[in-house]
Amino acid sequence: MEKTNELNKFLSYIHMGMSVYRIYHDEAENINDQELVNLIVEIEEMFKRHEEKITRLINDLGEEATNSLTAAGVMGVYKEKLKVFEDSFDICHSALKSTNMGLLSAVKFFNENQDLPHTTLTKIVDVIKDYDKIQGMWLKYLLRNIDSNL
Image (tube, rainbow, N blue to C red; front, side, top):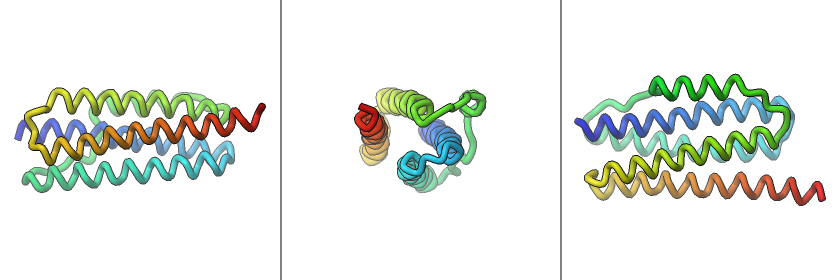
């Protein structure tokens, strides 16, 4: 039960990431950058897979998976909604920072929960690897745009 609570906390962090990326999605559509929208949609699909994997894991343990954010998560999403995004760089900058925060949270969760079953830890590592991929996707997008401005 205690570990299920921890997994639900981890899941709420993933929900937070998804909520923040919905903001980026809307902002990318507002500035009419289809390449950016496509990138964000690809990342949102990764978050959906994370949500599904961790939800299934919690349900398989006989517990109910959370669909909500922690209080800190609600505040984080609200803070992101208040930002003014003037261009694609602003969105990318915030997305990289948010992704890094998610990566650090996932690594911390992994470190603090070494007593979870190996199969569970493997799923957490998969999420961590995806955060690394997402950071790389953002950097490639930024470099393409930097190169096109030279």
